[in-house]
Length: 484
Length: 95
Image (cartoon, rainbow over all chains, first blue to last red; front, top):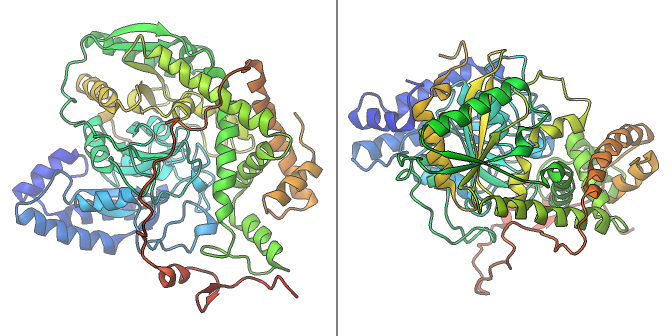
């Protein structure tokens, strides 16, 4: 039952082969028996049951849509009414959200059934899911390895088929890198496509919600349901959402794929490079043309990102003060000491590191040298993409330089951890859509991700190319041992 | 670029994060590594480039100046570590 696509479930539900309640119970049982993965912070079994019962009534009345009764796991960064929403942090360890994020509300309106809230790096700051207050998540492909991050719980849950699909968010690669490390399809849409209302903010000019799925068709279905204008997010775009499903079956003959030479140089593991090259040849066999393009400023993407994202985070996270909600330290001398003790005890080490970097680069005397400098580089990086897209329809490369690494391997060196996102975070700086698709396995039987980057607001092309790639290959059908 | 533990203590104070000498020493090592990475920005000349703060590069949308939010004070204050009579309670600031 759990290996089916969303569309297959919809057919089975309509035919009455099983009910929404049965489907939901099936996944809740899988979650329970796979608790060693630590993929969930909260399992919302009661909510799921209520929603499944309602969905069965809608199916019975003949009013089901494509997502009615389909279970989903929600990243614990999305506020969910009446449900614990921790963002992977001690500082929100007791936060029961009084409202739904727009993404959650839209998916519930479509009849989706929320199974639970998934584990994640604290405040989405991490690439391995090891910074979570709730402990690391294990990669279903190898329990000694990380699932990637920050959406590691969502990725592990979908890879182990504890949920058919999951929401995720991406500030510098947090959907795409875990998709690559877990053999999934993960899409981050264009900035402004999905409402950020009710998403706990990390870096407001970079954050976007998206989907972790087992194939491009499922990702397209759920992304379409999440997308669209929202008055409550001042950066939400008031533009029509294309019919992503309608263009999935288009031929990719004649599509021009740009290959940035900067993405195929040293620093990419040979097995990853080989798998990505083979995938590019597969796309050529399907009729796509490839050309070399240049992204000359991509080498400063990481330093630029690690100024701008912490700067925005230091401002956003100032709201956690132990006054209005969340954790407050037990003992303190005065108001200021209460703030300092609350924040030092409530935030983990990586979050404190990033708050301090952000505070430093925004502080008097350093603002121009770091913050404004990084914003100028952001312009150059964005302009590089604009120039490249004059010659091509999409850009391809590896999602991450390596496959899943061992838990604990990169814990002592934050910079080594940051380099995981070398190919993904420039996409957030420019606000572009990006998708990672399973594109091979390395010598240790760990998945490799192919990264496709689209023009601004052109999710359709990357979903179309990803879907056609999946029609010709079977990497996305591979399942980690023990979870069949 | 090296960040000293004294600088960390100053930054932590600005960011309202409790620190002590041992913690500042520990953070100084990692923050220095990160700032070494950040310094790589200087290899590219950005004279005359307009800073980009946002992918949309446009002014924020405005809406009609009318009240749309409901008063949910009680619901929100139920989440507070300490609240009374509609007020958030904090340690005494004036003697």
